[in-house]
Length: 177
Ligand code: PNS
Image (tube, rainbow, N blue to C red; front, side, top):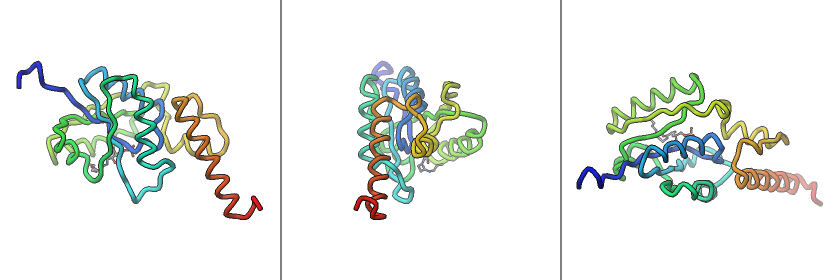
């Protein structure tokens, strides 16, 4: 294969429950640096999530479709095994604050040691330095406005899901009778 035909590929892994503007900031900047970005959703059955893996993939696919060189996939188990099987040499991670760094550095060194897969750290846009999917869900659950933190479609689906949950809880406790 000639040097010109080598595809420079990187993975943006995560739970994406749901994808936020902070994730999109990192994915779009990574897409400017690499020929192809694979956004890989971790399938983690032991962790409860608001959206199913299929729903998260569908949301990610819709909000990244304008990027052209981004595709969405899922993985089980070790990220480096996924990378090895698909010949992806680089993991791209966003760093929001110094507090992210300790754990991210540890994972990056482990992944490099396990399989020679390197990690590129990108500082997040300061606008999103406080942003986490878990916080967004918590704030929205209590009626806070998170519309500026999520793509419009994701915001709509989040409110719908929370509404469904509220109805289900009310039905369970007999309040709809
Ligand atoms: O969005 P998250 O939950 O912060 O993403 C964390 C993720 C999925 C990137 C990380 O937990 C991961 O890579 N998990 C896969 C399992 C694995 O490879 N563990 C060893 C890390 S050294």
